[in-house]
Length: 131
Image 1 (cartoon, rainbow, N blue to C red):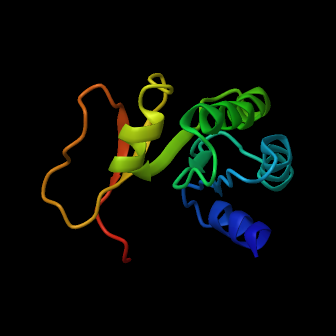
Image 2: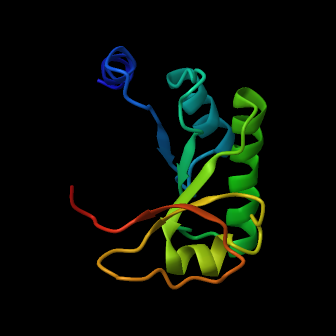
């Protein structure tokens, strides 16, 4: 239903965005190719969002390397930096140090204030896991 929803959002003048749930166990280049083949961005669309919530059996170093492989393909195709989505703990433990030039979409539920390292650049704060 992605294509129908994507086109429906455009027809109804809704700002569109697409995200990819990054799988640490899967080939990063194949994941990027799949995203690129599915998502055709146009002016006014949000940048791609990469949802990174697990490291699987990878070390931090290997996770970062694999994620950077994915990101290189996405940036080459869309000419924009993607937004990285995760929760505060994962961002601080695995992403913040290696992606200082990227904006984050932070999942931090049911809190009245966002407590995250000041060096982390964030664009969105998702307050709830419900609609």
